[in-house]
Image (cartoon, rainbow, N blue to C red):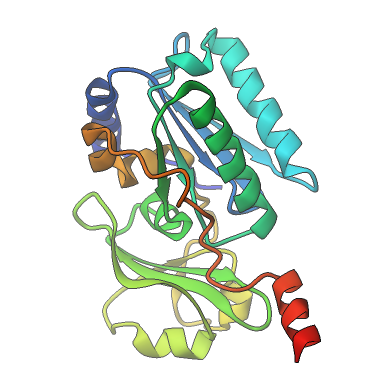
Length: 243
């Protein structure tokens, strides 16, 4: 598993900690390989990350890992200056749990909450100039996007969305692109360059929302929802029953 932070990213996180005026938390539960990252927590490294298998009860796994991290550092929720959280696309259950937990903490102590794209998190975690993110969306479709991360931050060249592999492939430029994500078998392209070891690093989610953190512009909790980019199976069945 590749889980790296470059020197430039570490410097940016150190500056973000100063700008925020205190510890920050980042959560991403869009995949089964969930991660929680703490920036500037007492008694820990500048950046401390916990990776865990979300399993069949992701709410319990996330709550336990947050509790353990707080116990180790002696920090309370009131000490945290802001939370960044992955909004998806990805696991429906994981996204709901991650956002609900983040909202609960934010509401409980009045701290700002910042949402980021989970596909952008995959891209910035890849440590490459141009990254195509491909995740298995079932139904022979993929969650996909193309990001330019050459300037230290990731800008979407092809926005997050649910597509067929064929449609996504037709929109990609001809220049060199690194592919990441769990959708390689669904995408079905053996000629592209993949890094199967990359996993989304929640710590880098803080860099995706760094400008908003510096300005203290938290998202409106009432409007912040998971970005599924497709209907759930329950919604699908409900539509079929109405037809």
